[in-house]
Each structure stands twice: as C-alpha cells, then as structure tokens.
Image (cartoon, rainbow, N blue to C red; front, top):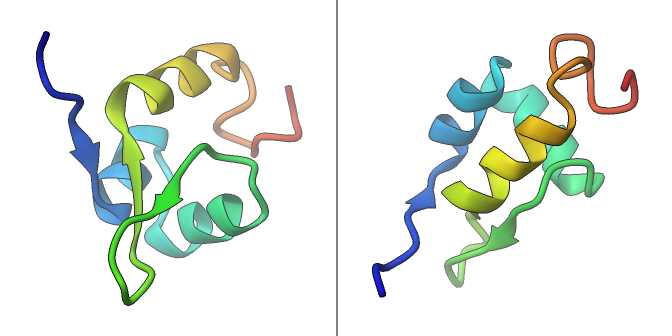
Length: 68
C-alpha cells in the first residue's frame, strides 16, 4: 500500500485554482477537506481527498464551493 500524498496550502490553492488566502478561508469554514498538520497549525490536505472534493464540485470550483 502506498503512502498518501500530503499537500501544502499553496498546493491546495493551485489544485483548486484560487489564491492561498481564498483556499485558507474555504478550509477554515470547512468547505474544503483539510486538517491541521503541525503544532503551529499549518493546514494540509490529502491529495486523494482533495481530488475527490474537486470532482464533486467541478462545476462550481471557479465561483466557490457553494455555487455547485
């Protein structure tokens, strides 16, 4: 079994096509699947979970997760 890839906030933002601040806001409001990874509370996401989220919101990612 392979290890799951963990993405940084920058990588999350790039994958969903928004700036880092928007990605962070969506994560904090629990619109995007992510978790706190370090003692300092840096956000991370598993690539497979984020890809599944993107697929389920593919029509609304450009205008926000509530648009779909």
